[in-house]
Length: 205
Image 1 (cartoon, rainbow, N blue to C red):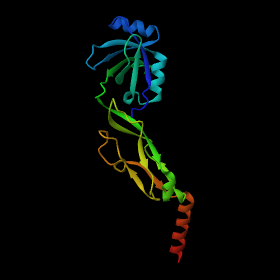
Image 2: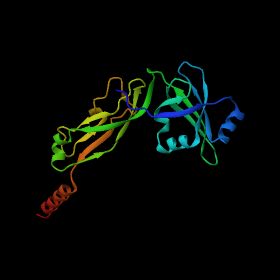
Image 3: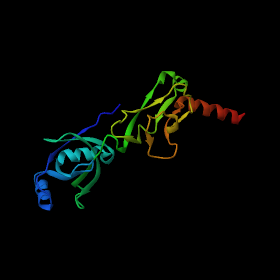
Image 4: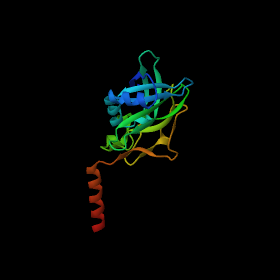
């Protein structure tokens, strides 16, 4: 049930210390280190443009990556820190942590809505307003769901769908304790206008 994990391609970095890090930056690479997972730390470098693109896509710190380094086995990692230049705000170093398949990690998981045609509210012209198209959940690295599913069957106009209404996979839980809203079925603007008009007429009588 694991979702598609994006690749993060890096190179093994020879040498450690400030001198090697400066050399990597001169070559257009961002130095970094991979640690944890019961293995020795490994010095790496990631092409600057590749890392910058990933950072601009957002949620870099909460995305699980499949780290690919030539000559090494692929490993699942999550970013635990990005150091930036204080003036230019550009990445200068990255820390990645290896995850075992049993590791628990917080990730954003997409929400999928099903059975639109079985919702009385949507049949009447109601509008599905999605508040959270994805939800941050604590999951196991070896069993990451592609998505969570919200069943719209029986949903009427005015219904509000909370996270407690969703059947989460076993062992998965939200990072937020409160029962937050995922979506709601709201009345179409024409129906709202008609209801308001009727209310005004009733007031005039």
